[in-house]
Amino acid sequence: MQEWWEEFTKWCSEYLPLGSWADWFAAIGTVGALLWGVGTFAHSRALARRHDADAVVSRVGSAWHGTTEVQTVSVRNTGSRPIIFCAVMWNMDGSDHLRFLTVTRSRFELEPGEVATSETDAPKGRSLTLVIVDSTGRRWYRDLTNYKYIRGQRKIRKIGGGKLPGDD
Image (cartoon, rainbow, N blue to C red):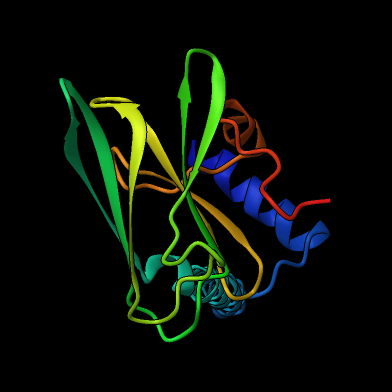
């Protein structure tokens, strides 16, 4: 076995000048540092993009309409920039229902520090989705069951995340 290894290293040094161990460690360290830097940049950029959406705090409650218990949603903008659009969406009987969280009837914005509360027609236990359009115009879809963002166009279309009011 040792003869084979010696022949292999002799062949490598003759036909493949690979350099010293120090050269290899330097190369691997440089590539690793470059990958780490790109990953850190991408992560910080993703956090900055999500800043406005993360500043929207929501809570699901319930209310009674006669003998029917329905879900209510309260939303607070804890950020420093306004939220352009905020709505609750749910699926009932195979059709998409979109319920708007409005502070006043004339606008849909949620100013910093403002709270909006809306009662849905969704029965208790129905999955609700919060639709947020942040100050940069980016749309975010947050599942109000587990408070995680919904990613991927297929999943967004499945929950009915197509056109919103004002889309052309």
